[in-house]
Length: 635
Image (tube, rainbow, N blue to C red):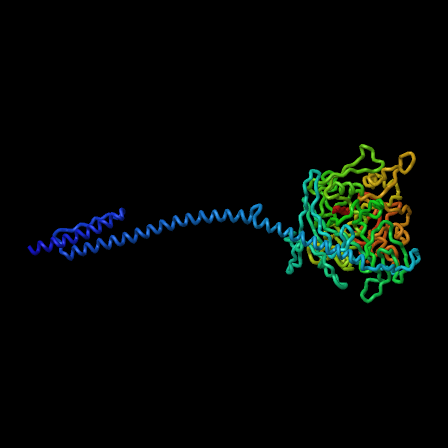
C-alpha cells in the first residue's frame, strides 16, 4: 500500500509538470510536446527523462528566439536599404538638380566673378577719372612744327603698354576675352578655353586642357627689369574645327628709343614716339602724330591708343581700325593650313594648328575671300559687301565666324608691339621658324643649324610671342605672310588682275564714282583692308617709310634712322614697303632668312600664288594669317 501511495504521489507531481509544460507548449505552437512517462522505470530514470525534455525545450526556445531575431534583422536591412535609396534620391536632387547645391554654388561663383569684374571696372573708372584730373600733361616738345631733318638714333626701343577699356579708361588688368558670337539663327556659338601643363622632367607642354578658372586660363604677366622671363600666359581658345586663336586685349602704347639694344638700363633715351608724335630727347619734333589717332593721358605722358582697336569710321578706316571700339581681337595662333585645292570650296577646312605645312600657292585675292568666309564648323554670321564698281551679279555676301578676315597691317602691328612689351618678350627678339618645309609652330635660335624644334618644347616655344606655348607662333620666319594692305596708287594691272589682287580690291572701292563718267572708283580703306598711298618705285628710304607707313602697323615707328642702313628695322628686320610695281604688303620674313625675318619685318609682293607666301587670320574680329595672316574680331 505504501508503495502504491508513493507511485500515486509521483504520478500527480509528474502530471502537474506535464500540465505546466503543456501550457508552455500551447504558447509555442511550433513546439510539440511528446513527453510520456514509462511504466516500470525508476523515479531516477523518470526524473532523467524530465530533465532531458526540459533541456530539449530550452534549446528549442533559444533557437526560436534566434530565428525571430534573424527575421527581424532581415526586415530591418530591407527597410534600411529602402530608406537609404530614398535619401540618396533626395540627396542627388538636392545636390545635382536644377536648383541643387552644385548649381547654386556655380551661380554663386559666377555672381562673385561678375561682382569682382564689376568692382575692377569701377576701380578702373575711378583710376581713370583720378588720372585725368591729377595728370598734368606738359608738352615735351619745343615746337609743334615738325622738322624731318631732326635726326637721332632709333636703332632699338622699348614699348610701354597700358590696358584700356572700350572707353579708353586705363585698367589694371586686360579686358576679359570674348568667347562667343551669335549666328544668323540667333544661336550663341562659343569657342573653348584651353591651357597647357608644363612637364619639368621632359621640358615640354602636354596636350591642351580646359582650365578650371580664368586665373588658370591666362595671366598677362608683366616682366620687371630687362629679363626675358617667358612667364606671360596670353589667353588661348579653340574653335569647333580645332583651330587655335590668341586673345589680343585693347591697349595703348608709348615707344622709348635707344642707340642700341645693349644694356639699355645704362643708356640715356635718344627719343620717343607717343601721343605727341616722334621727337628726340631734347623735345625736337620730327614727325607729328597721324591724323585720326586717339590718345590717353597716363602718368604725365600721352599714350597712343592702338589703331587696331579703334572705332575708325570717322577717318574712313585709314588708320586700320574697325567699325566700333573693340575690347580686343582673336589672332590666329599659327600660320593657316588647309588644302589649297579645296579650301576655297569648304570654308570649314581652314585651320590654325601646329605641326602641319602652312597653306600656300594662293593669290592674295583668293586668301582674302577664303578668310572672309571662314566658319570653323560654326553657322556664322552673314554680312553684305557694299563697294563701288560691283555689278548686281558681283555683289557679295560673306558668312563667317566672328567677322573672320585676312589680317591687316594694323592688326599684325598690334600683336608685334604687345610681343615686344613687358607683357610679351620684354624687348627680346623672337626666334625664327626655320623649318624649310613650312611646318607651323617650329623654331630655332640658330637658323643655319638645320635643326628645328616643335612648338611644345622649351626651345621651340622661344619662337612664340611669349617665349612659351601661350603666345602666337610663326610671326618670324616660316613663310612670308600676305596682309590685307595695299598701295592704292599701285599698278592697276595687278590690283585688278584675277590672278593677283582683284578679289580683294573689288571690295575696297568707294561706292561713289571718282570720275564724271561713273566708270572709275577710288580705292579706299575698309574695316577689312587698309589702303596705303605710295605710287612710286621707292620702297625703302626713310622718308618714304615715314610718309607711307602708319602709326601702329610696326613699320615707321620701329625703323632705324641712326647708325644702321635705313632698310632695316629693330633686330635688323626688313623695312620695305608696298609700292607701284608690287602693291601688296607681306610680313614676317622667310624661314631661310638669317637676317631680315622677324615680327617687325615687312616687304612687298605682286599678289600672285607662290610658294613663299601664306596668310594670317583675325576676328572679333577673328584675325587670320594665311601664308599671310588671318584675323577674328571681338567686340
